[in-house]
Image (cartoon, rainbow, N blue to C red; front, side, top):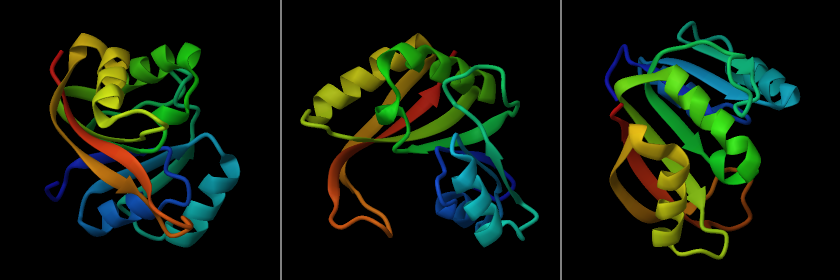
Length: 158
């Protein structure tokens, strides 16, 4: 991340990641389908002029406009039902440009990291390339214990 980049936090929840990005001098936008989460995020972090939050269903194309250099999905895609995932991908394409980077973190859900990588890349299609991935833990301020996950660094190529 470099200052001035535009970053999108997909499924931002309480807004901590988007707020951290804005604190690093990025123009950060957080989106979540839960209006209550957006209200909490805005109340907690909304004073930063480089930060905004919007209630958006990421599986419904065309409801939000933006062009971002970096997209972060820390737990959204793995919760979207299979029949809604094409809308998510359509939005990723609309919100990014060739060269945009996606950090995608998915819970393993009784799958191996290799199986989750294959699943993610089959969903994303030929417009995205997996650059690298690592097994990691999915944790946060409200987690009782870390959950096994895979972190994937992906680039928009087409």
